[in-house]
Structures are given as structure tokens and as C-alpha cells.
Amino acid sequence: MEKKLRTKDKILQASIELFNQVGERQVTTNHIAAHLGISPGNLYYHFRNKEDIVRHIFKEYAKLLETRIKPPSDKAEALDALACYLDAVFELMWRFHFFYANLPDILSRDPALQQDYQHVQQGVLVRVTAVLKALKQSDIIDIDDDDITDLAHSIKLLVTFWISYLKTQAPQQAIDKASVYQGVLKVLLLFKPYATAEAKPRIARLQQHYEALAS
Image: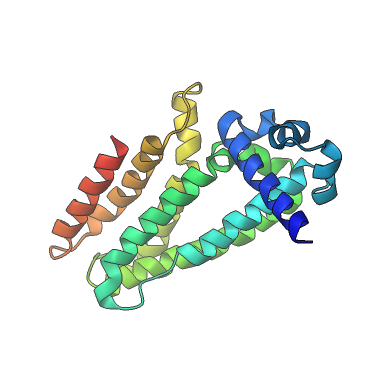
């Protein structure tokens, strides 16, 4: 049983790697099996088809969303929590950039995945809103309560479609870590207009940090 679990995990990791390299549309189960040096039958023992693989990858993605995006537990940690949130954004966009690059197409081919995605995104909106409220309570940002949900939507929108935006600007150019960090920097810039006078110097240092990573 242990060996089967290891093989299943290897299939998922190889799939993510190939999807990121050449795009999910271009990869078949035969490509994945060949990449791993296993028979297609061995792959089908663990997954019914490619859609099944994508669903399992999405479950891993959703689990990371749930565990990595959390509001700060107290005032002293608020800005550190913002940095952790931005790092989580980078991790997810980089690790699953095939998913962000072709999201509408992937979801349109799998109604069950579409439903799961919408459910997960509702939870993301709740958590991002909680992060913003905590940052306001900690005097890191100063924003009207009525605008918090709209800002949360704007952050989600930027994160969701940054990779696909890059692909429209340079279709043949590979996504690299620097380009993903450019997206993280854009997310931070959404916070900047709301930064309190006390928080501005620390947010500026965060900006310099991500500018270095994005260069």
C-alpha cells in the first residue's frame, strides 16, 4: 500500500511539472507515464484519466490555500502576517502556474471542478477579507469598512489572472519566478494607498524586498 501511495504522489508531482512546462492542454496521460518511466496501465491504476489528475492537484492547491492564508493572531504580528500572505501568494502562483495560466479553459472542461473551484474561492474571499480587517484593526491600513470587500475582490482578481495576463503579453515567454514576484509586488501595491503613516516605512521595505526578487 505504501508503494502505491508513493507512485500516486509521483504521478501528481510529474503532472504539475509537465503542465507548468508546456501547458496542461499539451500533456496527455501517456506523456506523464513516459516522463515517469511507468506504463500507462500503472498510471490508470491510480487515476481514471487526466481530469482525475487535475482534480487531485486542485485538492492539493485548495489545501494550501486554506492553511497558508490566515489573518494575524494579534496586533504585533499584523505586518508579518501580510508578508506571509504575500509569500503564500507567490508559492501558489509559482507552484500551480499552469492552472492560473489557463483557468477558464480548464474549468470549462470539468463542471465538477468548476463547482469545487467556486466553493473554494468563496472561502478565499472570506479569508482575505479577514486579513484586511485584521490589518485595519492593527492600524496597518486605514480603509472604510464598506470598501474592504471590494479591495478583497481586487486582490483575488489580480492574483487569479496575473499569470494569464503575462501569457497574453508574451505568449511564447516562459513563466519564471521573477515574473511571478512581479505579480506579488502588484498585490502589495494594492495595500500601499491604504497604509497608515506608522506602517508606510515597513511597507516600503517590503516593497523593496519584492522589487529585488522581481528584477
